[in-house]
Amino acid sequence: MMQLIITALKAEAMPIIDYYKLEKGMSKFYPYFRGEGLEIICCGVGGKNLKKIIADYFKNGNNDVNQIINIGIAGCSIKSHNIGESFLVNKVFDETSNCIYDINPPSDLLIPFQQITTVSKVKDDGGIEIKGLVDMEAHFICSVFNQFILRNRLFIYKIISDHMDLKVNKLSFRNIYDLIHQNISKIDRMLDTIKN
Image (tube, rainbow, N blue to C red):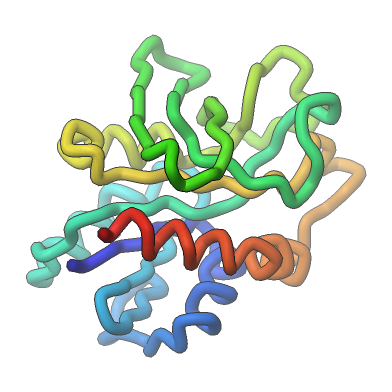
């Protein structure tokens, strides 16, 4: 069984690459790493490059992917969750469209569920008007991998990185790496559970 992890940022991918000792894949125009039953690609923030990178990935014979897992950071309002908390996404909204994706992650993972809204620009107003989490790619991933949703093969795992206050609290590569690294045992348990 092949699991494909999609991250936006290399800082989100590196703790996973380090933990599983993944090796750099063949030369690509995007970061690509692989190991036994697990591959990871970094698509950049937002949906701009996502479709092009995904098309290239599958064009090169990677058709044995059974599960798609988006792992990354997300913002939320200051009153809703603490930095470092993690969630499986069960509903994906888009701030510019009425299209909503319902994802049915298994409840036996013991990871709380949360909804997410994909935005086109960084939110730095404290997120008062948005319920749940905020990111810049989940909705794009759902639109590209809709068939995986229908077969319960798409998972979105988000870790709270900010309270939509990035004007004040900038996120460095190290901050993001550490947030993912602090959740690596949960990520490992989740990946192992969903593939069985």
